[in-house]
View 1 (tube, rainbow, N blue to C red):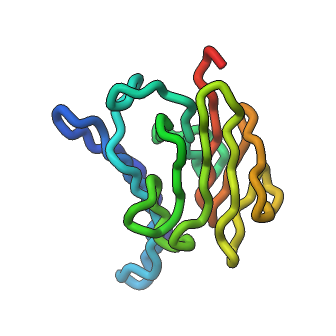
View 2: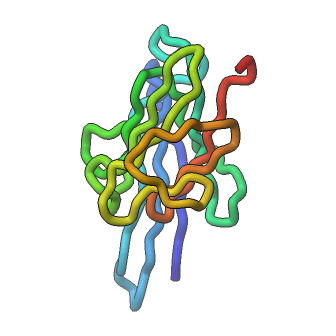
Length: 152
């Protein structure tokens, strides 16, 4: 039995903690576990900074989920390291980096040597690739759609 769970936990005065997990149960025991956890977020202005874009988690059937990660900082790291902004437990410690500067196109760069990051289904090299609205970034089996704020 394969169970996918996605939910958001609201922390009073702080925002939300986004959690998304896939668990495979075999013969009554947990067989495998994969998931991502994002840091605390606050919608709109994030700690006094302008939102520069957002990553929206896609469900396995490519539908949008309710989980999104607003981006307000210059760099967003995705990986398994505890210091990553979006943690994916089975990913490389720093799997990829998204760089966003106000007034410029965001870029994504693969940092993983095994299981490289995909951009719109194509394997990336170690160079920066510009992100356009609705681009799909895949890290292992987790997929995120990039969106610029509506005024961009």
